Length: 444
Ligand code: NDP
Image 1 (cartoon, rainbow, N blue to C red):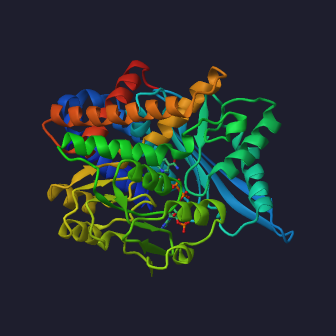
Image 2: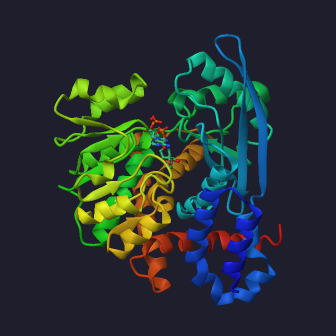
Image 3: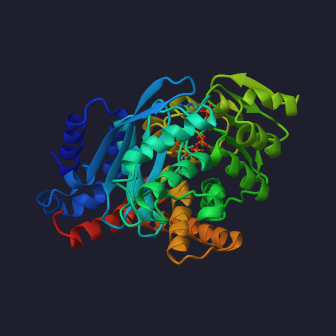
C-alpha cells in the first residue's frame, strides 16, 4: 500500500465519527500524492504525514455561564492547535450548536495550508464552542464569552496562538473575549484579531474575507481569459463573508442576485439590495424573511435552493458541505463558469470533482477565502509596531496577497502536471512551505 493510502486509512481508524475531518484528509492527502511519492521512503521514515495529521495539542474545557433567568448553563469549549511549524497558531473561533472536535479538526487542518498560502508567518489552529449566540441577550453573550476566555487565556498569547472570529463570532464576541483576556493577564497584547478599531483592530478586517474572495475570483477568471464585469453571481449565506463578497462583486461590475440563511434564501433578479441586507443582518440581527419588506419584488423561499438559480459565478459563503453533487449538476446545467469558495469546504468532494470534470473554474476555500486570515496577520503586524495603517493600505496589501495566491496555486498545479486543478495547486503550494519548516525543525 502506498504511504499516502496507509496514512489515510490510519487517520480514519484513529479518529472515528469525524466525517468532516476524514473528508479534508481525503482531499488534501490525495492531492499531495505526487509530492510525497517523489520521496516516499524518506517521508515514511520521518512519519511526516502522521505528524501532519495529528494536532500538536487539543484542548477541551467546560464553559459554565448564567442565563438571564438565573439558570446555570454549560457548554463545551475547544481549541485545536494543529501546526506551528511556520508561526503561532492562527484560526478562528466558531460558536454554533454543530461545533464538535471533528469539525474543528477539519477546520484546523485546512487552516495550516491556507495560512501558509498567504505567505505570512502563521501556523494553523481552530476553536470554538457548541454555544449558540442566536437569540441570546448581549449580557448572556458577554457572560458566556467571559467564561470561555477564563479558561482559554491559559493557552493563547500574541506569540503562541492568536484566535479570530468565525461563524457566530463577530465584533461583539471578540470585544467581550478581549476584555476578559486583558483583565486576567494585565496585558494589552495582540491575542485576538478582528478587534474593534478603538482597541487595536485593523481597518478592512471586517471586509477582508469577502473582498479577498472577489480579488481571488477576478484574478482566477482573468487567468482563464474571463472578465468578471457584467457577470451574474449567486451567493449563499448572509453573514460576514457573504455581505462583503456581495459588496465587492458590485464594485467590480458583477451582479449578485441571491443570499441565504439557515432558514431560507432570497432571489432578487435586480440584484441584492446591499443596504437592506446589512440592516437586516448587521443591525437588526434578524432573519432573511424581512428582505421582502425592503424589496417586495424579490422572491423568498424556505429551505435550500440558491444553486438552482441560473448564473455565471457561484460563491458559497455559508458553511461546510452546503453544495452537493445535485447542486453541482444544477450549476453545470445552468452554464456556470466558476465556483469560488468563500466558506470553508462548502463543496462536497463529489461536487468538486463533478465541477472540475465539467471544466468549471474551481477556486478552493483554503486559497479563495484566505483574505480573512491574511488581514488578521496584518492586524498582528500593526499591533506589533503599535501603528494603524489606512483602509487603502490594508486593502491594497490584501489584493496583492490574493493575486499572489492565484499565481502560486496555478504554478504549483502546472509544476506537477495538473494545469487548471487549483485544488491540487492550493494543497501543494501550501504544503511545501510547511514541509520545509517541519523538516528543518527536526522531530518535534
Ligand atoms: P457568519 O456567522 O457571519 O455567517 C454565516 C452565514 O452562514 C449565516 O448566513 C448563517 O445563517 C449561514 N449558516 C451557518 N451555518 C449554516 C448551516 N448549517 N446551514 C445553512 N446556513 C448556515 O459567518 P461567516 O460569514 O464569518 O462565515 C461563513 C463561512 O466562511 C464559514 O464557513 C467560515 O468558516 C468561513 N470563513 C470565515 C472567515 C471570516 O473572516 N469570517 C474567514 C474564512 C472563512 P444563520 O444566520 O441562519 O445561521
